Length: 289
Image 1 (cartoon, rainbow, N blue to C red):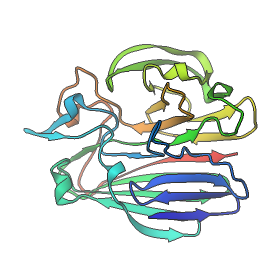
Image 2: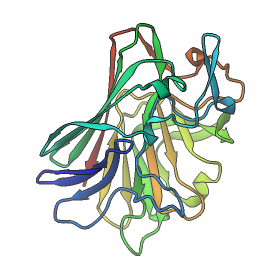
Image 3: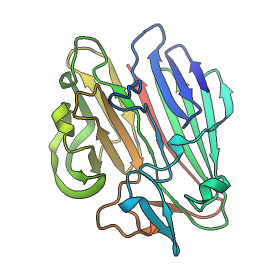
């Protein structure tokens, strides 16, 4: 089910399937900021990544002595969420574990995703509650795709991503979805020029950033999207090198496994853990200009 909320500045749509953001437009403007899931390139728009981010070695992990199978980015993006609260400028969705999910992920949880409009800002809040009687491990991440270019007559090469601060960062390389080597990416710089060639080796995976936000900009128009990811330790930037007219900016609490990762979920890089009754919250803000 698609639900719509709006204020004086923005109108957004959210699909209860995956609690996935489905549209971002400025009020009175036909320009669509969010990628619209063309299956010729990528059939999703802004999936929620839970309870893992990225890929596991052989799609397997262990908790205690038991082995489980989990495909890339987890199962939340393929689940039907319940719409539990709705106001003119807010939508809130909930997913809880089921008997079927316990075969994939052996923890009792509640995942609550809330979309809130304030002026030209969309706040996306992710709340994970441990409703189990034991310690729980998880990751969570956002994966919004943005139309790039936004306007006719432009190309991806007209766009760039500006970091809040100058960065010295390495890019971790993926091989079949798993982390391998690192290479220099930003050298006291704050700008990444976009191109199809940039994604020939899959996503750009970054960690250790000083910046708390990035801005997607164009050299041909004044429209921009600010992605505020305060507190998130990892970020992915991704598109397909086949002429795909979108770019994903992905803040993560978690990261893909490496080829040498141990199978235990508790040993996975970036994994979060908390005790029964604990609540974890994080928030991504999108400012649309």
